[in-house]
Image (cartoon, rainbow, N blue to C red):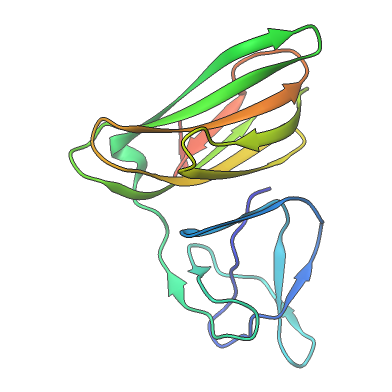
Amino acid sequence: MRCELVWPEGVAPCLRLRRPAVLALTGIGVVCGFSFVAVQATGESSTPPAGTSSSGSPGRSAQSSTSPPSSGTLSASFSISNSWGSGFIGTLTVVNRGESVVPLWRLSARFPGVVIRSVWSPSGAVNGAHSGGRIDGIGRVPGPGQSAQLSFQAEGQPGAPAACSLNGRSC
């Protein structure tokens, strides 16, 4: 499961991990493979509100921002560049079909029966995390007509994702 550092306004950013997994830091946010719980000084935990994210760090105040822009000008596709008996290399590509820069997008894809072993971005413009057969990416597409890619190595039968969302919309 992909997540961001999130917590209600006024709650100090003291974090407790619920399920360990992968953490990737970027200049545009945090993508991780576990969920966070905001813990107040009293020890009470709270559920973070949807649609907010923090650019703060432990020991600093939370600074909220809104969700990424609509995926209306973006499209996503999947391709397999290599396969062998027990696995494959797949690539998720996000293309900016609009007329302006899209500063931030989020992509999630689920591959049932597949275990994703590693994730990378050939362009370096994307950070990704994986858990089992799910891959999550966050990145930006520089300009109109340009694209960003998130590649991965997986074990299992090659095939298109069973589910895919780009900025919360089906893709």
